Image 1 (cartoon, rainbow, N blue to C red):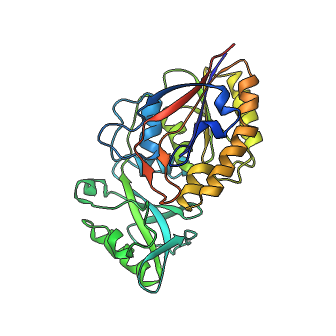
Image 2 (image 1 turned 90 degrees about the vertical axis):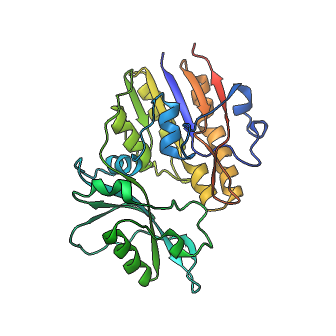
Amino acid sequence: MSRILCLIDGMTGPGFSPEDYPHLRTMTMTGPERHTPPGMAPETLNCTLYLLGIRPVPGDLRAYVEALGGGVEAAEEDLLLRLSWYGVDSAGHCTVPIPAPALPGQPGLRHHILRDYQSLLLFPGQAYRLEYLTTRPPLGCHGVPAVFFRPLGFRALEDFFDGQLALGRCPIPWAQARKTAVPPFPVPAAAVCAAPILKGIARLLGMELRNVPGATGDTDTDLSAKTRAALEAAEKYDFVLLHLNGADEASHRLSPEEKRDFLMRADATVLPPLLASRHGVRVTADHATDPRTGRHLDWLQPVFVKEGA
């Protein structure tokens, strides 16, 4: 018998009620629990590591974990940053996410596209600049002047931002990091996920990463295939992390209807096979996400439990 943690990214938030989901409401609700580490922001990396028992959760880690998830090699002395790409309107305000562009090579930096609007910047040998660097995360940036997200403390990064903004697109740099080690997960474990940050967490903790055809990390992911992969992994491993990212992505697109539709499909497709299995199942969120603003919320999280047979 295994333990399966079904982590529905951004599941809760304003308007969420377990009574709206027929299978979720049959589970035993416990908690609420705090999944945000003390002194940290409610975001996927921090909350997921804390939920998985990592104490303390290191700072300056996210871009490195995204590099692990995207297969980007980094040395201990390298500086990494996540980029979130947004359009810019005629008034200079951020609009909607845009695909990360393929950029020509530039001296002193490397640009790696992760997926969609997400990419990484790597500055070889510049990790020491972490303590001088100031960035702002992009959550809730729609309608905000793009210059608000201009980084400070590293001229090469400032010049990169200014150059891209002059081309009519805003690359918001954030989550600066360097290569960092954490203790491995304490029992044999596997992860079923598609979002680069979750793939990176799995590799960081030494979990086997199960790649699933049709898994996208968004609302169009193949929920049935991911559920089958989680149940297959549960026959081999003591612990399985099944991550569903669509509700969070829908919230960032400011679409309450899309978020609710994804949660209804997850309830109808994912939960019945999990609940019918012999394995222990927990369903929870890493953090709440407000689909009206796109912001993560530092709320205590309910946990829904089904004990193993």
